[in-house]
Length: 449
Image 1: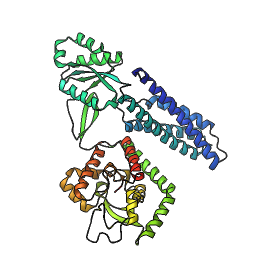
Image 2 (image 1 turned 30 degrees about the vertical axis):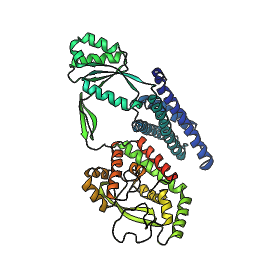
Image 3 (image 1 turned 180 degrees about the horizontal axis):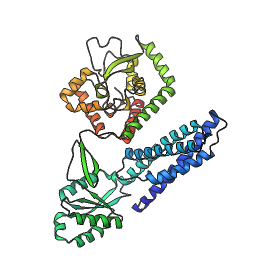
């Protein structure tokens, strides 16, 4: 796949978005017509929705996929467009009094549109990631300035072939000092690079302006690279008039759109599981009741976001009165676990009642696993970084739970915490979906502990 074909990607994405919108419209119309009403007239609604989407998509350019590939950013941009679109459609409906449009049809259309677009974008990202790792669809980059900074940038790109960047040349500070501005500019743009990364902090403003102007003329992106290297900190750029300022923080801050999307996903997914999985819940209740004495559900105090105490729910997998000697962690051959309990712990089915915790907002689908105060005090003593995890809503599943499983002692809990801190450093929609898929794989393969 030659890079020139990448120019067709925005066109393809725009057309497929419009196609998915109309598929959602037709499916929603058929569903409402069949089950909710036999007098739905939606011709005007279909025209309005299409015209509004074409206008808003053209303004927001939500169909443009930028490098590096960050699914959460793309979903954020789409959600912004979707909100603008919904407000435009609702405003037009009430202004022109198009009351024949069904509310159910609108609800199903937007819900289906959102789900299908997320699946479509995920597929596009997967394919782009694959072909770029194979060496196709690459952008040629040229670096100018400090060799140390440039080398670190090159190593970063080599570790991430999915970025699709190919290094073609470096113009060092020594070379810059020996060249006139005219010769330097000629050397820069004769390389026919797609992007120029400037790692030269001593570049004079007039020269920088000429580079930017010529970049616009030749359709070459100009990017400035800071000499500030971060380890566990995170940065965002704030523009004060014409002055860019880097804001640093120890923890990544989730945008309002990601928080909103995460909560909507939690509500939708947990509701779906509890409704569709009702027969499974019933079977688990019966099996738990028949295999050992005691209540079906087990309730335990855990520490949630901002150290708020809440009760977590599970299907009981141990005999009653198993912690008379105080808080204990389970082990591989723990005699406190019932025979049926071993099965549901292996398949993680004992965790299903926690979808109620998710539904009422105490937990999320994905997040660091909640622990008891007794063990949190020990974890904080050995790993002060654990307090960062307490700023997040705890999850029904986590990267630590998937890759490590149940911990038998505090040292193993610390090993699992390292995975969760990794999740904290890389929160995105893409990572959340990967954890959910891996959790399903663990359940099917009975790899839980």
